[in-house]
Length: 122
Image (cartoon, rainbow, N blue to C red; front, side, top):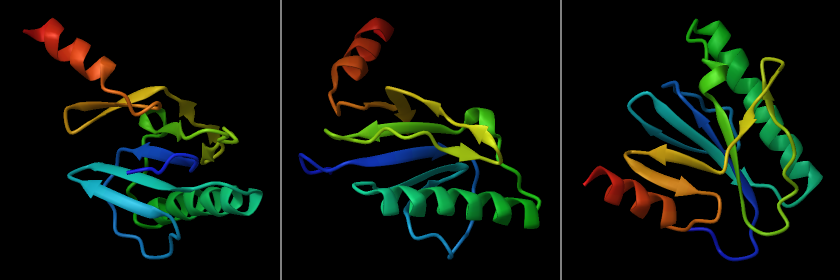
């Protein structure tokens, strides 16, 4: 859960891996990986960017390349600096919502889109 006023960016990286040299938090499920951290200062933004570079380097060493076109950024929280992030020299797409384990998560952390999707399918 994100406390009000906190800012962080989440990366929806579609690749399974084991990597210990990343300072950001990592959630894994099957071949989906979420990388996220608080980004309240330029130093924290740089740390997250460095983690992405380390992940790309790791993926090349282990020949488990990321499909960068499927990697996305979602910014949460008020006053989020909404900076651009990249992987392997390619800017990551910024999205307002993303599906995770069948549940649509929005940048505003509201259930509106999820409820609309469920109703439209029934």
